[in-house]
Length: 132
Image (cartoon, rainbow, N blue to C red; front, side):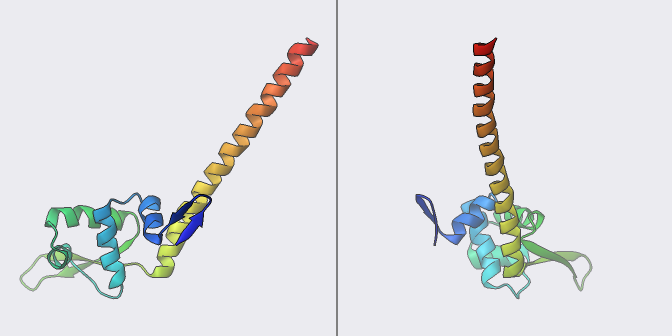
């Protein structure tokens, strides 16, 4: 549990917000993280979690493009291939989310700087009118 000012956050809330995940995507991500040494197909996840395959495929694609999952190609005996996925390490996940949090902190800092500059510009303009 994390406490920020007037609100407490579970780590899942931080993942959900930082990575812009839906509840389903978060559940699927957690399934990978619970088994972080195992490679899964989208079908494996759909079956074990009782989810629609298209829901899992959409979530896995988003998690992969968000750098949450590693992907590899497994060649099938009868030809063709299937993609398999595995969660990145917890250390990599930490770095990923913290990099997003740092970007957010920089944006907040810029907003404060703009806020301060607006006040200074207002004071400067008011003084110029008085002296003008």
